Length: 216
Image (tube, rainbow, N blue to C red):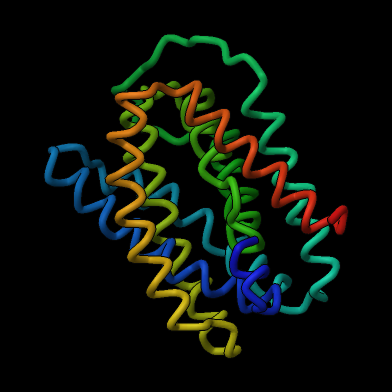
């Protein structure tokens, strides 16, 4: 939304965001590897199922009108608020599970399409799928999540680059901000707690969604 508010067309804003997403997840995968958290074989298997949908989603995204994309983005962001407010059930993790089941494969296909199309909130979808379908703990969920997003973002970024839908100055600036923001937010979350972070995020999403829907 911020890129759209800065004057970029929806497709260019969508593509520009992928530059930051790609570089952010390169850093994240490397960081997990340094901490001895990696299972590239399983991560790659899951990533493979996201690729066809991700490419298709990005091709659809670049052909949508600005107004339609803005409305879809606003609705998705409101949906994210709703998912954040739904109480989560605790489940027993099975961290040795390294076999893909049919529900997980289907989820990866759908998430790939969604990620290629709009990206916003894809982390919630991946975390829910891996946590509830694979029964992995949240550390392993995040480890796989950043790898999966990294892999499917590469071809989607190429689609946006080839079609001229990337603003490189904004994209690289955003990437630098993502890296700094992740470092700062982690420290802030430890000191202030999840509830305050969630409150700030919900407030920001409500304002951006209202703007996209033309309420002000």
